[in-house]
Amino acid sequence: MARLRVGVLISGRGSNLQALIEAAADPAYPAEIVLVISNRREAQGLQHATQAGIPHEVIGERDRGVFAAVADAALRRHRVELVALAGFMRLLDTGLVEAWCDRMVNIHPSLLPAFPGLHPQRQALAAGVRFSGCTVHFVRAEMDTGPIIAQAVVPVHDEDDEDRLAARILASEHRLYPLAVRLYAEGRLRVEGNRVAVTGGVIPDIAPLNPSG
Ligand code: GAR
Image (tube, rainbow, N blue to C red; front, side, top):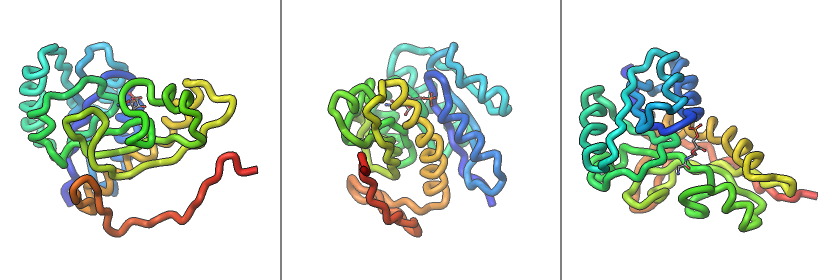
């Protein structure tokens, strides 16, 4: 069966890109990465694309509208069906977001709608929450908003600093993003207003407590 053609947009390290590449290395995974776009030439993540033999383009254009036009043309040229933002740290042109409505997803390291924007782990520590986590959602024009596909909960420890919490959340991102893309590729997501209905999902019956003692 033809696999879903995914284009990934990055700005930096690209560890979520690498998690998607590794998932797609399994021929049974229903999606493949066919294009990587970076807005920064020095993005480390481009090396993951090179190593995996995936076509990649750097679009350094600073004008938001021009960036959108060039990126859109590349995505269409590579017959991309789903766009995955993976640490893409630039606000996208509204027209591009609308053109890819319900075909563009993003991962963010908090339990949205809590802590959108920059430094979500710092925001979580400042708020004193006992749990944070990560969210994969369909992209809407406003930053870090849109119908939520999947979330993973991660405990916050008393001795956490920003880096330790970020690392614990990142490990769960690497599991959540491939899962969410798989659900999309299997046609199991239906957007209903601001909610996403997932068919055939297994609902875990867990009630985490933190602290538990
Ligand atoms: C990830 O933690 C991702 O969730 C976050 O940037 C990091 C990128 O890491 N994205 C956002 O904050 C988007 N608002 P990576 O380049 O190693 O995947």
